[in-house]
Image (cartoon, rainbow, N blue to C red; front, side, top):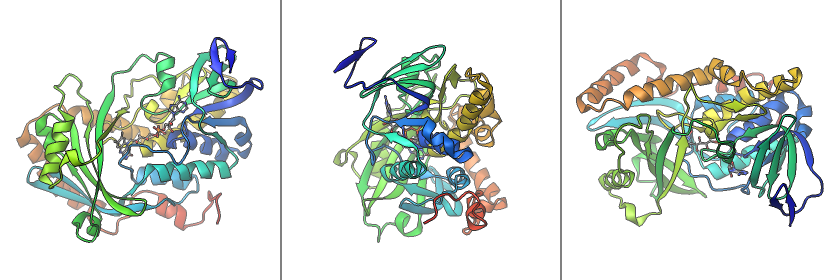
Length: 408
Ligand SMILES: Cc1cc2nc3c(=O)[nH]c(=O)nc-3n(C[C@H](O)[C@H](O)[C@H](O)COP(=O)(O)OP(=O)(O)OC[C@H]3O[C@@H](n4cnc5c(N)ncnc54)[C@H](O)[C@@H]3O)c2cc1C
């Protein structure tokens, strides 16, 4: 054990100089690296990704990936290769009312250990160094570089990307000042008989907003999934807290009663919880030499969608990083603006606005009215069509594959 600036480090061969150090190898971190390498393959030797975990690592998540995410993957030349459950119908429920949006697929449900491991392997194939089992322990931002101490080494990085999730160490160490935007989630996996259950047979994912009556600012979900090839229902509750001033729902009670309606007893299963930090367009996304991506920066407060946005942050961050080196300006003063100009984050901004409104008023008659209206309006959109393939990915990947870098 050696000490560096008062911190214990296992071994130090020498301080490692690196242009870009990415903390976290989830979708946001790997996407940032992949976008840099796509812009110029020589970036591969200028990036190091460190993660405290070893892939395939567990990540609590519903695993729903919409076309917003598959579009980002398609632009990177990637088909959605990890195993997944194909959702053909998204059923949105409130009390006895429901409406459905259809698609082929409407979205995909993957297991995060497999999905994230796949992305890491793609990154490594493209020359990116991913150092696993190496937690970041300390960060100090200087004028010329950021000193980052991990369990095994010391880096002097010209830029650090905080891609380390909702409980971001980078954020907390650098005392980021906007910390109140955190959604709460609980999740259980229940083993199922896929031959008998309609959700498995017909490819249905359920979002049940009825628990809004129990002060939940969100919904209960049923996501059919396969864990190591076996059918499980991923069940959980999402409480956005987009309106932090309102009373808190009891998440355990909501999950317990929602599962009881589906003839499942919560106490028979292993309950897990994790927060999601959500996106506020007025938030701070960077300080000089450090920028945040993915959950560390903020995800969707309306539905809790985070994977697609995590992938999307990578694109914007990569552009900002390349630009910083080109101009030798590491202030990242325009990173927030870049995000807000990007199509995906304009959409995320809209979701934040809708979440604040939708979870403010809690009148069942109004929500029911909204459901009737949505059921009517959906008829005029392509989401009524079972063969609808949303997004750009089908076109990008079926045509000339100009971006495909992973041919086998
Ligand atoms: C219960 C639940 C259900 C969800 N369901 C969905 C869903 O169905 N669809 C969807 O789109 N989103 C969902 N989300 C949100 C989604 O999981 C996140 O938005 C997504 O994981 C964000 O990716 P990320 O790369 O930013 O962070 P993460 O995936 O959290 O990755 C962060 C990485 O950083 C590493 N790390 C952390 N600290 C350190 C450190 N000190 N040093 C080194 N490495 C570190 C971690 O090991 C991890 O690998 C859900 C979230 C929860 C909690």
